Amino acid sequence: MPLAPLALEALKRRRVEQAAERLAAGPAWCDQLGLVWTTPRGAPLARTTLWGEFQRCLARAGLPPLCWHDLRHITATLLLAAGVNPRVVQAQLGQAQIGTTLAIYSHVSWDTLQAAAVALDNLLQPRKGV
Image (tube, rainbow, N blue to C red):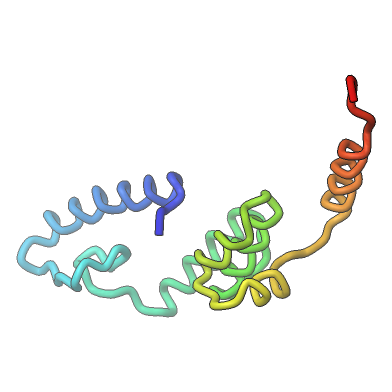
């Protein structure tokens, strides 16, 4: 699955940071089969450490506390609102049925209703030369 350029750049930056950590740790480096986020010595992060950092990032961004699964809902909702084809969103989520994707994640906003009204109006306008 392709990654968003922003995510790809973050992973590249992390690779550089981790290479520096690996050099600094020397023989104490604990290779954990390619983990991306680790302690400065390469060990897996404790779940509570990762969770706490996630919540601090949210707070710094002015966002409320969220759970990991909320990120899935937010991503799907934003992609659908941006006009991404629901089949593409379904594939990214790994859902078997398009109906599940649409039932859970497609929300009708005032802006969406207004855009539909304008689209219908454009379709019903008399065409010049017809």
